[in-house]
Amino acid sequence: MPIRPEHRFFYPIDWQQLCGAIRFRRARGRCEECARPLLQRVFHLGDGRRGDAEISDWRDGQGHRLRQRLRDDDLLARVRVTRVVLAAAHRDHDTANNEDANLAAFCQRGHMVHDRDEHRRRRWRTLFRREAMASCSRGRIRPS
Image 1: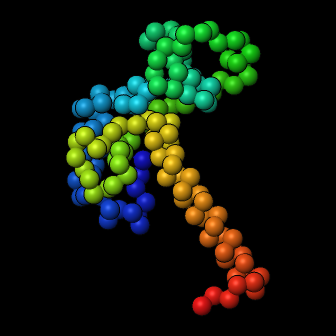
Image 2: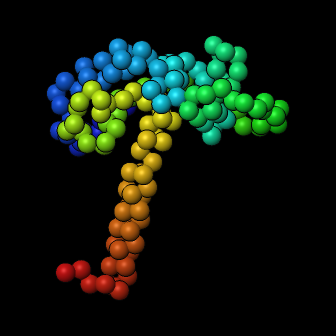
Image 3: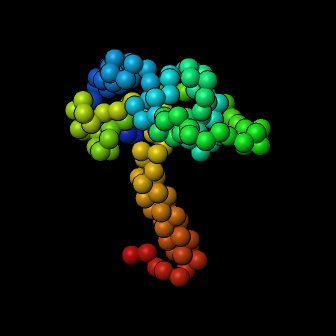
């Protein structure tokens, strides 16, 4: 996942090498959250359940084999195809902490699940800021 130019100074100069070491050497090209393989097309249902060609069966969001069979209407109505891309992520969200144990290789879904609380916080902050700016423009609150 590319780093935004305004955030680039938060990362070390050798971030590409660190990222590659985590994704390819340690994780061996698989997501450390759900074991999805890099660059393979994955058939999934959007809720974490995905097909695994290696075992010819379905897995849940954590990579465990499903215990119950899927109904045909689930498969036909909701199946999607995604190409898996891996990104290195900081487990504690601190870009200054580049210890090996703090870095993880996540697929798109694993990264979104890991960052869920941070995304919620940012969304709330953005909505709060928009409402405050709208109140100022309507003349209800005078900026100081």
